[in-house]
Length: 153
Length: 219
Image (tube, one colour):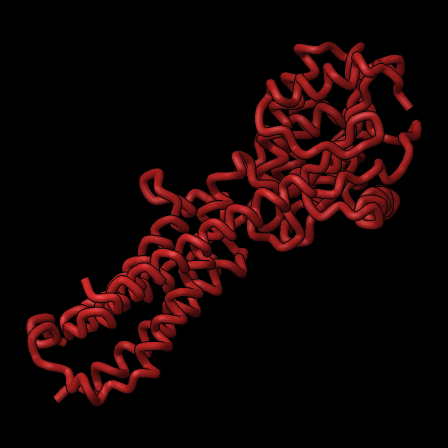
C-alpha cells in the first residue's frame, strides 16, 4: 500500500461504523492497562522474583529492554498514543487523526509478532501479560486494516 | 473551548489518571499485605546447613538454581555471611525447583550428588555463579560433570548420584513442604522461622539480620 495514498485519499468516513472506532478505543485501553501494569512492576521490583507463573523468564531476559528502556514502557506509550489520537478524532472529527491511528497499528503488530517469536523460539517461555498485549495489538491491526480495505473509496 | 471538548479531554485525563493510580495502589497494597508465612518445616540435621548452630539468626532460603533472582540473591547472601560472620547467621538452603525451569531439577540433583560427597556448598556456589552457562542447555549433564571435576569429586559416583531416586525424593519433599506452606516463588527467605519480604539491597538485608540478632531468641 502506498503511504501517500493512505494518508490523502479520503476514507468514506461516515461509512466507518462507530462501533469499530469504539472497539479500537476499548482494546487500546485494555492494552494500555496491561502494558502500564508491567511497567509499574518493572520499576517497583529491583529483583523480580521467580514465580510459578513463569513470567520472570521473559520479564528479566535481555530482550525485556531496548537500549535501557523497558519494552513494557514502550508498549504503554504506544497504546497511550493510540488513545490520544482516537480521543482527538472524537473531539475534532478530523479524518487524518483516524488515519494516523490506523497507520500506527502495523507497528504494534510487528513488535508483538517479534516478541511472540522471541518468547517461543529464543526465551522458551511465555508470559501471559505479554500475550495479552499481543492479542490487543493484533486486534487493533486487524480492525484498522479491515477499515482501510473496506471503507476506502 | 466548548464544554463538550472539556468533557471529552477531561474525561480522558481522569480515566487514564485513575488507571495509573489504581495500578500503583494495587501494586503497593500487594507488596505491603504480602502474607508472611511461618517456616514450613523445622530445621533438621539432614538439611543443608552452613554456620554455627549457636548463631542467633537462622536464615532459610527456598531456592531454584535456575532462577535469575536466586542468582542475584546468592551473591547477596554470600556477602551477608562473610560480613556478619557465620557465628551470627546460620544459613539453610532448601530446594524449590520451579516447573517452568527445565534444568532446575537436574541442577538440584547435581547439588545433591555433590552433597553425597560432602561438597554440597561447593556445587551450590558453582551452579549459581555459572547459571548462564547451563540454564538453557538441553542436557546440562556434561557441564555439571565438568563442575564436579573442578571440585575433585569422584566422577563415576557423581554420575550415578545424578539419577538417584532418593535424592530426587528429597528435593521433591523440600518442594512439597514449601508448596504446602504457601510459597509461590523463589527465592523465599525465612528469618528465625518467619518469612521476610525479600530485601531489595544488601544493606536492607543486613538490617533485617542485625535486628533479628539483637531481638535474640533462635527457635
